[in-house]
Length: 250
Image 1 (cartoon, rainbow, N blue to C red):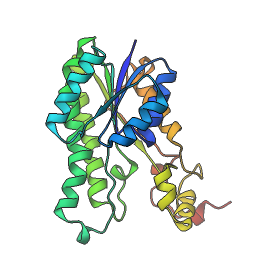
Image 2: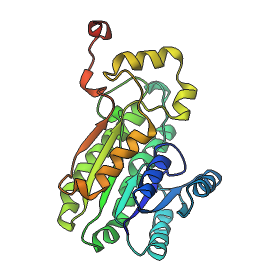
Image 3: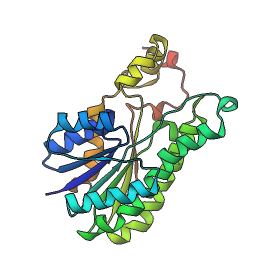
Image 4: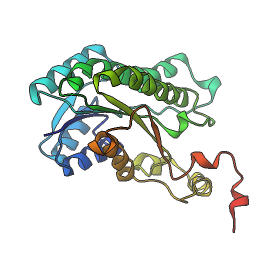
């Protein structure tokens, strides 16, 4: 039976991916540093391995390898989803804020993939999916740390694909556009929501389940000849560039 580990699995896209993979018959482990939320997610999912750990801490990463090895004995898929969103002007982004974003969004996927390489390669080659962002593909205001971390993760994906392919490990990334998570809907004003709708060709936010479907595809054997790709699951947001919404009116 295929097995997968999802970081940041206690909520949002990570939780939706865990649910999707379980429905596909995978054994699933979810990792999160928020212990209470992790426990609630594990209870809701049922029959999952829950690992409380921080992906930015090498000692936690090493412990997670031990837990997966003892719990599953193998690993076929790794989803590097854990991330920190910190938005603010460049002049107000302290180095401490910058490092807080980088250590989770970029250091974490580096540490996790490196630590699990041997286990992923052991069964002939598994798959890694890094969760970047449309903010790593196109610049936007207030995202100096977040956008830069996600752009770095996109390049890390290519580096990992180029080197780990020799071990049979595929590495791809999904770059979500605006997604209707509970957090986003709580902080996005009506003006922001309307502006996103105007800028997205599909004229709506994506859902967590839609992003999970893209991740699950890249983990599956249906994507067996796909590696080193950044899949923008964004409703066409990247394709519109900086086009004026008013010119798109019929």
